[in-house]
Length: 123
Image (cartoon, rainbow, N blue to C red; front, side, top):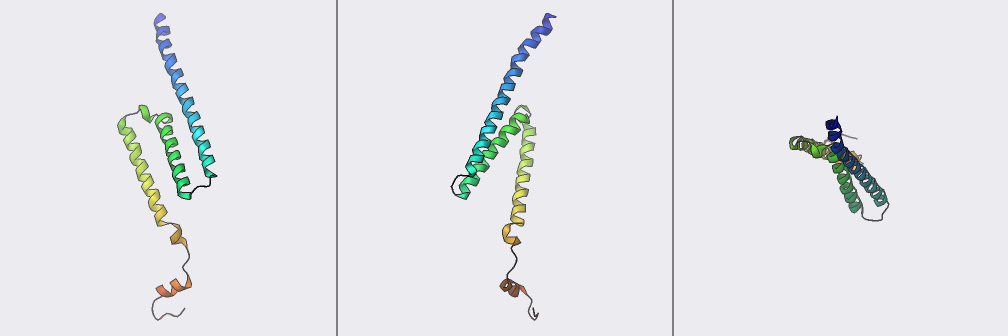
């Protein structure tokens, strides 16, 4: 009997300590989200706002995957596999944005149509 109560007592503070870490991280994520919302309305250059938002989102992403997805306590191999998938997904997204960007979706003007029309065809 005394063995079970002795083994449960040391585990209790560890679980409580983990709970406090999760609460602190959740509060930090809420503060970062508030900063992101506040940054949107600031009158700065667009590139600076976008860079700030990307950095803040990356910080939030790292906290979520390392603590809430438990990658911090997982094997290094699993973490490396996760980041390889992340890099592949990012590269795919970048390629799709380049492929289907704004410049490719603008209709051709009549001057551009005349330039690409084969010789001898009448419009």
